[in-house]
Length: 211
Image (cartoon, helix red, strand yellow):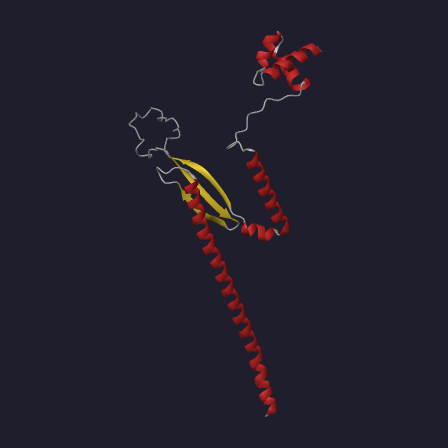
């Protein structure tokens, strides 16, 4: 039966060392591992969770700026969903690793007819890697960029990416304007032809009536 004293002792051990295992707790208190695990999970209602890795630790000002930007985006989203999605551009980056793989022809070996197929250990990630940066909107990918070899990741590199993105968005905006102009011209021509087709028969009928 679980006693309050043992529960308190296990609780103190966990507070002193949050990485302690149930086996070590049981050995220090002289109880079974199953008993210690039951107290930890059922009586103390604790779970051992893995650490969540984050890109960086933000300071107070950065967290406040992050919250303000999120609130502003949420307000834009509430005002007009369609307009919000059309103006939203998302960016992400990932490391692409190089692999030194052999072709199937290169990996072939001479073996006896009864010998098993040769095996090869799965290759690991090599030292060669390149940073890929991607920008996209609701229509798809806008810009793909790969960090040149030997270039460092700094503010100048990200500024150049934003300049490229700005030029691409400007061209895309002009393309949309021209597309809408062509659509309006096409609609105008169709309406004009339709009116003309409707007007010509009525004109001939009026001329026959006047005769």
